[in-house]
Every structure is written in structure tokens, then in C-alpha cells.
Image 1 (cartoon, rainbow, N blue to C red):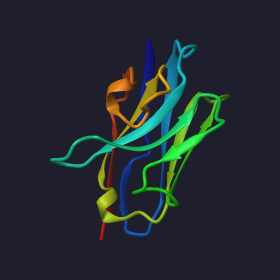
Image 2 (cartoon, rainbow, N blue to C red; image 1 turned 180 degrees about the vertical axis):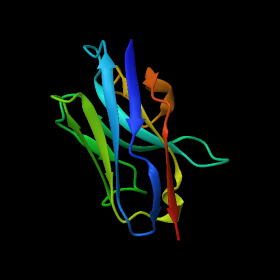
Image 3 (spheres, helix red, strand yellow; image 1 turned 90 degrees about the vertical axis):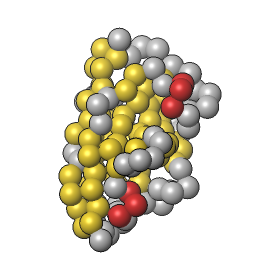
Image 4 (cartoon, rainbow, N blue to C red; image 1 turned 45 degrees about the vertical axis):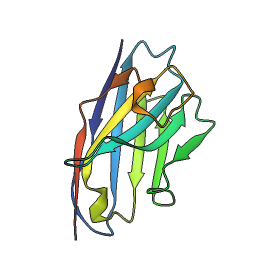
Length: 124
């Protein structure tokens, strides 16, 4: 089992920044990719960014590319999502997820473990 716990959400004005953290614990030996997804009210959960467990590669959805940065600190067993130039449309609950399968990493179905989420609200 892998446990994920997100933190760092909050209310911020448009153009501002937030850094989300995902504390990872448990049996992570078979984890190959970590990702952030988000879900706005009334919408489906959507992919935002992913990072390989080794940290060798990262990937971003077009909607956040150039504004968000995913990173991980293995010494602290934590994955981060630095969010800059935030827009009202970034408002959502942000979820951390872990998967063993590297394929189709932009889809929710391949992820084995999920955190409970942290709310991000961006005011205009």
C-alpha cells in the first residue's frame, strides 16, 4: 500500500503562486510515476502533470505548461507542484496519484493510489 497526503492548497489572486506538496509513504518500491490531477466543480478529473519516480522525465498538460512545475524530493518522500501565474480556471481540487504502469499516465484509470485532495481557489 502507498499512502499519499496533499497539502498547500488555498485561496490566491489571479497571477499569484502556490506550491502543493504530496507526502508519499508506504511500499513505494513498485511505483514508477507520480502525477497531479485536478477536478473542478461539475467537471471530470483531469491530468495536470507527471514525473517519473526516478525524476528523469516530466510531462505537462497543455493547459498548465509553462506555468506549473512538478518535482520530487526523494529524501523527503515528497512530490511538489509549483503553480505560477494562476488563473481562475485553475480553481479545482488537486489530487496526487501514484502508478506502477508508465503507460497512459495521463489517464486516471492507470493510477493505483490517490490522495484525498487539496482545494485551490483562484480569484479574479
